[in-house]
Length: 291
Image (cartoon, rainbow, N blue to C red; front, side, top):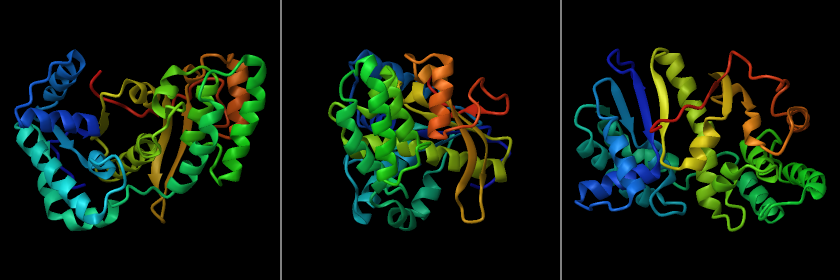
């Protein structure tokens, strides 16, 4: 991203908000109270000093399934044009997306993350275990099965998907709203999970080139918003091979049925962090917008 002294905040819009914007541009009048509210909050982002991007929405795609290069190009054009039309005062990256459309389509066709296959296998394996609430006396057994499934799927136990599966086990309604284990649509669930590493990548890149700019993720998904605000990170950095290096921590509030000691024990078991006795002062949450 090119350094721009006038930009203070960068907002990445999720798929649902971009869809609302496209409907509004097409003259569709919303009647649902929540949609009207979210559209109004999105309009409030249209102010000088903000940069608005549909990039994460484009990566996910508009079909609810992996898109081909050609399909991804169609999605890109619709979405960057919609953003350009909707926002008049804020800066958008529509021109940049237009210029790089071919390269971006080739890069993001399929919505593939380097852990997509492992996460997909893991989710299919553990969803039946947590599809409904598990009685307290049986939770330890299921916990061990979830962690074992992560090992079998070659997925680190500290991966956000594993941690959220455990959060479902221990009473988190918000994690359950994200994973929908009773009937998971794998592509949609993983698209939400992929937001976490992608946002960390963006934060690391922006901090390297424009450290005063703040990055926000705008979503109307209340479950995802709650979860993101309870995942903390410490100083994400881009490594030489373009991987993300950062310490991640999870809030105890994601595990409402666990005591503090039990939570710390679980986090040590998953190696999600080395110290969860308190929230480290050097960390901050993945920040969302549209409060």
